[in-house]
Length: 510
Image 1 (cartoon, one colour):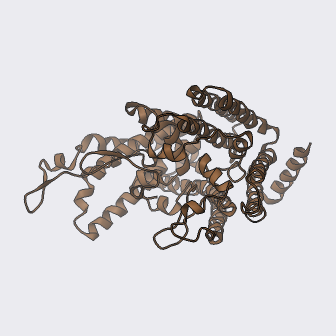
Image 2 (cartoon, rainbow, N blue to C red):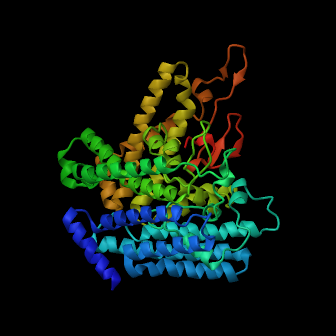
Image 3 (tube, rainbow, N blue to C red):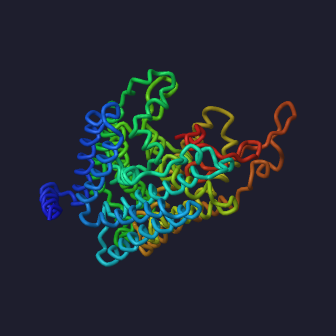
């Protein structure tokens, strides 16, 4: 009954403001989360409050936010969490993480199928959907199981540095588990947080371990960072609300618009409309990051200038995205924490021969079953292959002077952002017919250009010039290669050797 009154209140606010009920609900949850974060920081400080009280408050308020937004549908993630906690507690740890993965992904698949059914039944495109929180909860539930498995291994020599860092050596209690899964700081819009990072924050250890010579008793300043992220969220909200009315992305696949508008004009409209469309992700992730920082979660030490870094759980780097000159840099700075989850539960554990394929399949399945997702992922792979060819063979020709380097950066910036907009159209359209109609109207130009680059350009600069790059002293130098996957998991050195990088490596340009 309580939720009925809430629904009426949100409906009245929606009528008064002209915003959708989902948008009103999301904004209200964010504002309540900010308020709760300041309460958590000042009234439930770890110096004066026990970890159990902090855990209880965080988890219970997170469950309340789910109920506020989606009513009794919150029983789905509650059931998901309860079942998998029992698996973690009673099933042999040799198998518990695998069973947890199958069960939690099964719960998520049921939500995706329900979303797909409702979409085809009503045609309504939800700006927010209950599937979103379930995707976040799935990340936490599965990561706990895998990290606990790492912590219980008798021989940990084969674990990667990241697996050792996030390993859970003591099984979480019921309170710890549910507080982590339903933590209010990220239950609505993320971000994903590793269990050990969350417990370090709850118990007040997160500052001490990253002081870098600073006084362990002093809390790093956070207010300016939190305010900046809140202001960015507000600004992006304005961009989305007003921009989406002037440049609705669905117009790109409208039959009448396609038949009456020139090819070049449609490309320009596509770019602008998707620039505005992705601002809704900037809104959610900027607000969510700010909520975490306000509560005290996200401190990541100090930079070279002694300024505190609050990017431990940041999901996005807007400046790096908007200035990206390659798809790699763009992807590295988009949904960062999901990339870490994919690496933690799949990439680092899969057989080397199948790592890329299995990680791709998990990422696709985690997103859902709309055809547009898979069209985007497949097109993105083609774009990535083309950009690798360009970087290996064309980029060295522009490195002789600052002017030519600048020309190359401008060209690759323009090409990257146009290519990203081109391949993302199906991701936001969702359905196959509209996406195919758009590509057909564009004569599949993006795909054809990429295939031409892949098959026309040689594998390396040496093949392009038909000789080694010889320096003035007569020594030959091999061209540098860079093999990357989503979020910079795999890189190749200039000497051809491959190394696995940590998620915060500077080469990833986050």
